[in-house]
Length: 537
Image 1 (cartoon, rainbow, N blue to C red):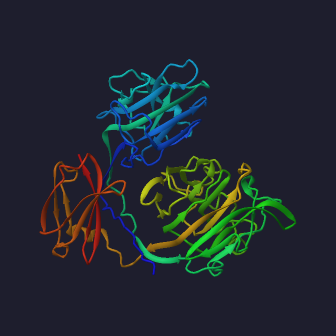
Image 2: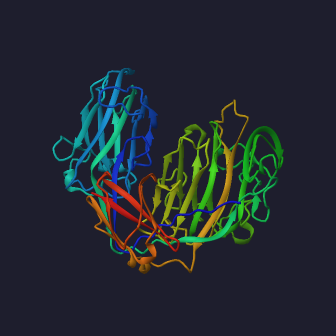
Image 3: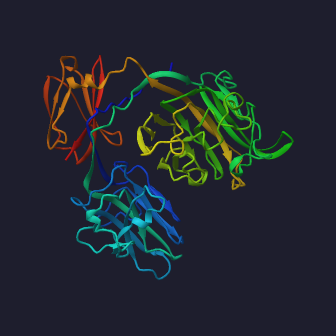
């Protein structure tokens, strides 16, 4: 028998959103997603230089292999306010044996407005020298260090509030020299705050409306799934994909309660076209508007594999699609596309979520992801929370991307209509010659929507958590029904940091051992479970 466990977070209508910005690359940071341009990087790389001031197990490996504009970066959901806290710091190690060329040994930290199509136009930069062959701590103080504004007419960075992207670049740009750097303990010395006085409570998606547990063995349930096999694009699939999608059990089957979608290297002829690879593409016969989607999946491997768990508008016009003949009125991308999970075998440890709309599609700017080192060896839970306001994407409860356009219209938000689910593995033209087969395994797919029996925000008035933010002591005031309840404090990464029981209606909790940052307090009684966000100053 399968057990269902779902955590629901409800935030009251007047909240303070807070965010720390740090990463120790041991799994304890708040920066869930790093991106790179013209370089190779790996977060959580085994530290090859355990010496001096840094003997930690894992670091961030930055490998510029000659890209003209190599860099790594991340974005924050709340903009920086440099008027109060303006210093960033990190540790760095560069070995003299891992550089080429005659570039100056340096590291740049650049702040940009990542919401713009050309974010570099807003850039403010600090450059610091690096000493080779030793760990060193480098700080970037935008109040006291020399900074460079790309636009000389821009204001002093401490007077600006548009920065939400941090970019790191080693040994400059506009060169083809190589450099490998190891970075650790990235930290911003402040906390990002955002008052949200007009927000509505996030909906609670706790009513299971559709699922497939894939119990048993054999073919998939055709009452729930449709095999999309028709070649839609003159003998080939979109994006230059080179596979045939089939409805055979060789490519789609249940095995001991797990769905297997298997891509194979084999000669196969269908619709008068012969191809060298086969796979499967499933359309759900269920469509919905708003809710939470959870998929527990293990991903395939192999350069050239491209698995996806995604959604399209039920109104799409697409040859061979399940919904087209009855409901098709919009072409892509006007129908809207939601990529809950995409993975490329050429970037093995990275998964991405993305949005495709008329405002940005194909190489969309609306995307985010995170590093999952066991994406193909372990099952992980990929989820989407879809409301009338926003889309929130997570892996194992860790958010890596939120799509929340300020202006919602048919160009930016074609998502006030039903969408259906798709599962597939595409094969790209660059597939490795050694590839023979690989599969995506899915344990379950579940869709939840709001229940009329959900608690409203007013029911939380019985529970008081204060002060918030806290210093060393937190007081919890609860109704009698929570006496004896278990309380657990979790970090942002989901790690349990403190647990205790509620023994009185006014209970003080010692939080002096907690580091500065954001935490979740979960209270669990026989009658109710409530979760609150708390901030340690």
